[in-house]
Amino acid sequence: MRPISDLLLRKAKPGYNPRTEQAVDPNKPYKIGIANGLYLLVNPTGSKLWRWKYRVAGKEKLLALGSYPTVSMADARQRCEDARRQLTLGQDPGDIRKSQKTAKAQAEAIAAETFERVARDWMTWRESKGDTAETTASKDRWRLESYLFPYIGQRPITQITALELRDVLKKAEDAGKRETASRVKINAGQVFRWAVLEGRTHGDITASLRGLFTTPKPTHRATITDPKQIGELLRAIDGFTGQYVTLAALKLAPLVFVRPGELRKAAWPEFDLDQAMWRIPGERMKMKAAHLVPLSTQAVDVLRELHKLTGHGHYVFPGVRTASRPMSENTVNAALRGLGYTSEQMTGHGFRSMAATRLNEMGWNADAIERQLAHAESNKVREAYTHAAQYLDERARMMQAWANYLDSLKAGATVIGINRKIV
Image (cartoon, rainbow, N blue to C red):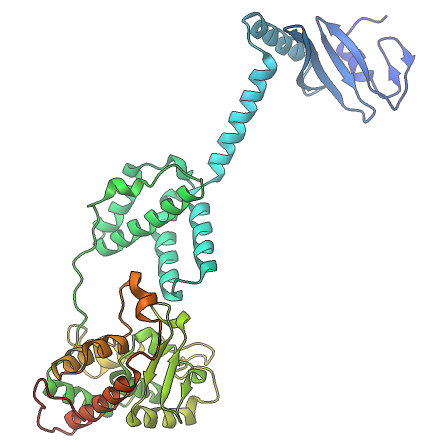
């Protein structure tokens, strides 16, 4: 029998054993023994694999030591010797190998579960639920991509520490974006809490940051509530010389006092001008509940005129560049700036505060006002909006009275006193 050498092992192939210099069944593997249970297994496929046969508690086992020629004979002997040393210490080399593989697999899994991957999965999950407004989801995505992904996006989520996140948030705060830092912390907490429930991390590290990067006290959006100044604003709107679509939005905003996003994304299929009703579907509302807006005759007149221009399309207020998208969220505010009103004086959202303040002072049912404003605490949404038509008759009267009141102010009529309803 020929002595073992690298040259001999290189000659080994299916159907021929160079050690015995004899032909063998090419469809069956054969072994070339080295020493002390170490051998080279030659397979019908041509692969050559190092194996070591050993016993533990009387039970025969095999340990894979690599393939030839990647692992040379000298390396295979050394690996075999290392395994034999483990065996003499009472350790099973096979069990050690399995533990090492498990640890490696776990490490790879941890490395793959980056914060960005988990965060994007969270966004996809939340989107599938359909209970988050598109604008909110878009802003959350922007904050994650702008303030977290560049710094901790590729870090395994289980390895991110509270101190690490604190330092990232501090970058935004140091840049003078305290409110942004607060909202980014909230988004991070949403991701971590979801990951905990999904078994993808161990805890919410943002809990340790409670009290840091708190949201500044909210400032009330600028509005005008003085009757005389309201009249001046309405006259200024009538004198607007910009785009007609923008003018129509400016005229309609105080008459319907919906949220700016609900106004600019208004779609013609939502309107029944003959019945003087605007039905906003729940998916477009902040509270995700359908909303009814009774339309005054003044509002219907504005919409009928606008329908001649944009009624062939989907959006009531289409964008300047393309009718396939609604007008920009800054359009109304920019128009108010053009009329001479600063952001500290009046905003598109301010029409809501204007109506709420004056209607309450004029003695209208507070519940009817709240329903028309589509206000409700998040945990009471279902209760508050079980019936979209709640107080609808009173709201319809109120909306018409409000429009008439605005007309009187625009005309410079005497201011109507507090607690006196307009009929």
